[in-house]
Length: 369
Image 1 (tube, one colour):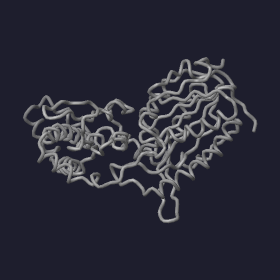
Image 2 (cartoon, rainbow, N blue to C red):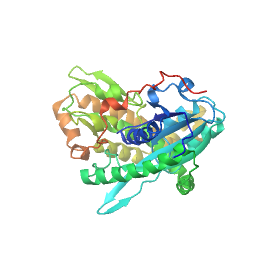
Image 3 (cartoon, helix red, strand yellow):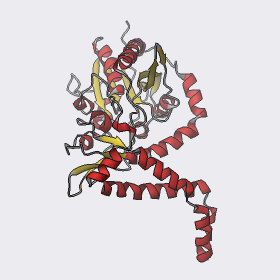
């Protein structure tokens, strides 16, 4: 195999460990060639020093697909990367695969890799490859984890595909096998944008901790987005999910007592109220009472519904945390969510401490120039 790169920098962003596992497989393949490897989660990255210069250096970004596109955190990270004229880059997205009987069904990464690739290209990187890798679906706020046999089968398929992809990337061969997914992703981009907003301002506020919570602080300390605050409510120390949460579900995947739940009851109540409130009538009466506010009538109706829903959700979430202080309230929330019965998923070979630690480069941090 022709080895083109002296140094390869791997950055990964992950929730349940899928993207880290794919990045680790690729890093192992690079190490086997004798090339220097820097391997780091986004939150520990130091791109100014880590990312090499020129044709002998390669940057690889590995991330999960979120709403058929790239997560906010990855887009923000890519925009903050230093310019590197002539440095090669590859972008890999893990996507939620399923196994139904003997059939493996692929996930759909949409514009995830292409959006990040465009940002890198604008910064001078030469994007050599974009690809999607199917890993077990991990959205356990919506569905239970797959059976272990299905998980093992999907991971085995993913490892073989990653080995082929790694060989292509190491040799510098260009590869854009997922261009069809990118084109389809453009068509569903409005859906992606809507879901990103929904995930940030709605789905993230459905999480709560049941009475099984021991106050170990693991969820808050290991959240990749610093999206969990700890509140002492006078009864116990409980996690509180803020608007920084992006529904990566690491908390749900790695909670040692499986105390992290998502309230389907709260979702139903908020959606019902937001959809039934007569916001248009209320606005008409308000502007008739205060004529100086008539400019508010120009606000699109969907903005009114979103604003109303967000205000209701914020109030409902505060109320839910008050109710969770009592045993009766906690019992009600815990037994009105399907997540209480769901299997939890985390990448089987990944420990929670693996998700946070940066592996130091063998040369002490000296980048190739």
